[in-house]
Length: 402
Image (cartoon, rainbow, N blue to C red; front, side, top):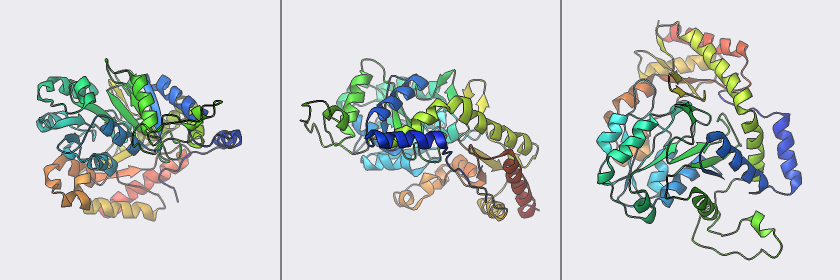
């Protein structure tokens, strides 16, 4: 069976994790701090804090900005549930909007239509590792500044809509020559097991807030907030006589461990010159073979000013129904090839339907979803296996669409 997206765990990672275990630091410690600095240097943002998930990072930043009852947060209907769930956790209202027909990303015109005096945050999602249109999104926050109605200290300081990018898929992607993480106010990465860069579980908040915000000061505050509101972490408390701590507020528990960071340190070192080169090779092999079939729509991953990071290969099949898509997937599995769908649109799930969301309001999202099949793409996938995947797709199409 060809799996969908297993992690690449080799002797280098095993050695670094073993070294972390032997060091005596298995929770947040020097490796986590080093990993944060390397992410900041790589992405070109101002400061970075590593956490146990991207979900935690998104929610923490919503809470930092004072999001709560009566506030609205705009996000694409085409995303994973985590993007919306964190808004619900904060007591605010998710405002879903439709996406582009070509690249799955949030539609700029639909964002603009959805902005009201209750809008506090826009959360674009870099679907499959392909960056959104950040200049246009950033400009919307400035254009509609007169509608912004601040109700917290940080909202008053920013005095406009916060752009909080769900960059879970897009570590290493570029937009107009700049890396994701440095494209807007705040970006949040995921380092889950299936991501291009993994720490098994984990995530990071890439802070890039404008003046007069002090991003390092915010970083220090977030370190406290994400460790129960405690003003000293375990590393600080090891200093002689420095055991005494205080609880500044009722915080959360979502710090990254040094065991996770150990994986990340190896991953980031070889990301551009190894991991991404291999994933690009697989992507291009799929493109070459599948673009020749006029029934298929291969994904956009490069434009004159955008370069995706090859996280997903979201193939679409022209003119089919959701039921036909499911039948094609079933056939592909019969060839011992694992495929997936990214994603079931959030408004089409039971919880959000009960809140009153209706999939009919997001026709492009539904059309993309109903025709999408994500193909395997991972470091250890051989070119021989790539050809097996391609063959399974074509044979399954021929069988279902005959």
